Image (tube, rainbow, N blue to C red):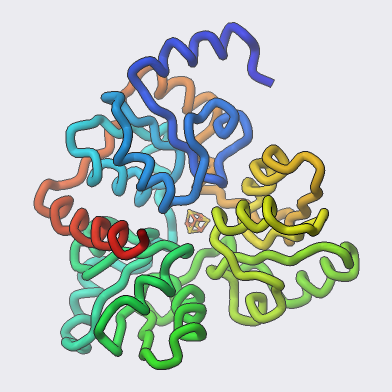
Length: 304
Ligand code: SF4
C-alpha cells in the first residue's frame, strides 16, 4: 500500500514525466504507472507522449524502443542493468552470418532483441503480431529470431512459409519452465478454467492450451470470455493486472515460480530514486537507432 504522502510526491514528479510499465512489473509500479501494457502497446503509447521524460519500467530492449521512437525525449529506467537474457541470445554478428547464409530470406526479429541486431532486420514484431507480420511479407523464407518457440508458433500458422529460427535454441528462460504436466495438473485443480499460454512456451505446452496469447491478448480474452476462472501461462506479474481489471474473476498462475528476475530488478526503491534523480538515461547510437526505427515503424504500419 503506497502512503498518501508518497502518492502526492509521485503526482508532482509526474508533471513532466510519463510512467510506462510492462505487464510483468511489480504491483506498486503498475499502480502508479500512466500505462501498463505489453511491449507493442507501450511502443505505440510512447509515440504519443508529450512530456519530456519517459520513465520506462521494463527491460533494456523495451526502453531502447521507446528511445528510438522518441529521439527528442529523455528515456529513463529504474534499473539500467535489466538486460533480458533472451534478447542477448542473438548478437548482431551472428545475425549477419545467418543473412549471408540465406540471402533471399526476409529478416523478422521479435522486439525482444538487442537494438544492434534489430538494426539489421527488415521488420520487428511482437508476440501479438508475429503471425500477421510474417504473413504480410512477400518472401517465402523468413529468418526469425531470437525465440524458437515463437518461431514454431508462426510456422504452425503459416505452413506455406519457411520460418528459420535464429539462433536455433533461442528461448525465454521463464516461459520454457512450463511443461505439459503443469497444464494437466492445472486442469485437474481448476476444471472450469480456461488455459491461456504465451507463444514463448514450448510447443508441448502450446498444444495443450485453450488459447495462445500475448499478454495483451490474455487481458482481452479475460474481459471478453464468459469463463470465471483462468490459468495463466506467462510471467506471474500479469495475474495482478488481470485481477485488478476483472475483480469478479479468478486467475491462477500456471506455475508460481514463473518469475522474471530481470523484470523484477526494477524494485520500488529504484523506481522512486529514478523518478526523483533521473540519472539512468537510455541512449542508442544514432545510426543504429535510425535503422532499428525503420524496422519498428514498419511493424507499426503492418500491425495497424
Ligand atoms: S520474461 Fe523472458 S523475454 Fe521477458 S524479459 Fe524476462 S527473460 Fe526476457
